Figure 1 (cartoon, rainbow, N blue to C red):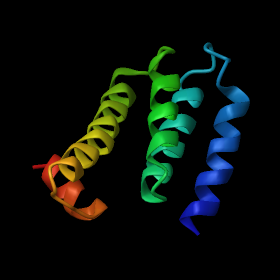
Figure 2 (cartoon, rainbow, N blue to C red):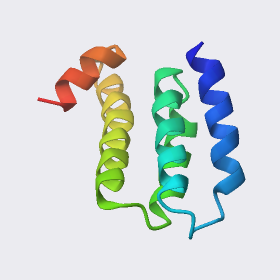
Figure 3 (cartoon, rainbow, N blue to C red):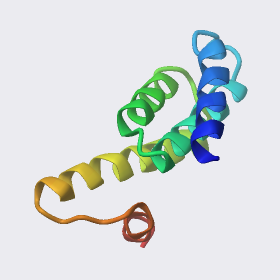
Length: 97
């Protein structure tokens, strides 16, 4: 179910990706798609969606949420390289402390 929602949200986000004056709709769609991508294990796609959104002019609160998502993605990869394996819920708890 999450994967299907991710695919639809990512498709909607791609339709508006180049429309920089469509804020906050553009950044909200991309942020939602990035969150769903993370939940679906699509970390590279999530990172790309975050980068696309931050390259525009998202509202500060959305930009902060995107940066938090970016940390979740990269912290997980860093910890795995160090031999520490956390699931997404444990990772969120760690980041949100």
